[in-house]
Length: 411
Image 1 (cartoon, rainbow, N blue to C red):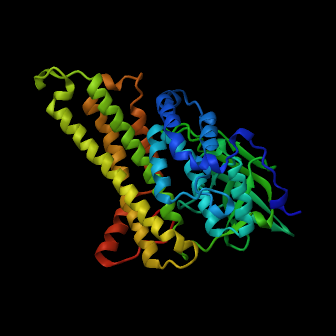
Image 2 (tube, rainbow, N blue to C red):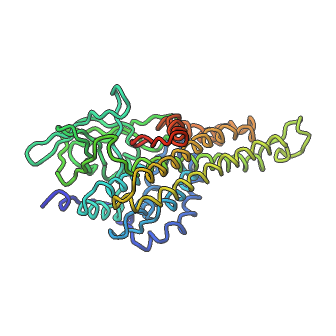
């Protein structure tokens, strides 16, 4: 029996997904999102990890929403998924970010997996599995260098090394681990969390995104079977939609943060803020400068939302051909540029709107009871994932000179 056939996943049976649940994900989600939003500030303040919340989302089919139809899934399109991530991030961007690598992992399996691997792992996801990343490392001279090694011993492989910033690691049942093989080729190893030698550390202590469980995964003599490996092309050699897809969901999270800060600002300005004497009005909501601030915030947040949805539509249009190897470099590049533009807009909106909240709320909005600063902390922490300046450069070079964007996971 091979490794794929022998792996079992001991999931909470209540998290198992049916096609009925998948078809209802959009209609049943609002009530849960409202509950998540109501408790988000408290979870951030106390660093209460959202195990139950993620289980409930999984039971609704959120984590399995893009499992392909031929493997029993609902296979929602990328535009619908982007909208769902915006809504989830508006409710709690920590939970959205915790699930973002899982969504990216499913796309990697789509792109690089064999039919047998797809059938196996998509089946696990339909049963409630969460497959998250163990990709980034620390201590190298350049960001993105890989030190984790995948060494061959007869018919088996062995993983050794440490991975950091493993978002969602505490909620995961499986990891997709980026490693360098003895022959210099890059591979992804798909490994169950309970595999001997895998250790997950709860050591994430960032100022924002506090409950994303972006800790360390240690790998010590971890056995990996041949059919648990996805062989990757050499870095920068094959253009796919993988990077644009990941960046689109990051942009959706930033957009959700902006919308959440905007919603808190308008509610506070309408119902709680007091006008300053200079305004000459009895309600803060009648202060022309408060109105001006809210108007600017609305344009930023809703503009970012429109840009993310536009980019999702452009990306969705090319993905079917990309999966069947019929998409050319130009179409894939167009999609990457659209996503880069959206990421720029969402980055700016999340940072600016979360800071402008205090122009509406005033000094009383800074009190810890509201925990409004979590919006800026979340935005500032999340937007450091990749340098948005390089996106602007790539976009400008594309429109000015027709230069295609670089092939990497950031643009």
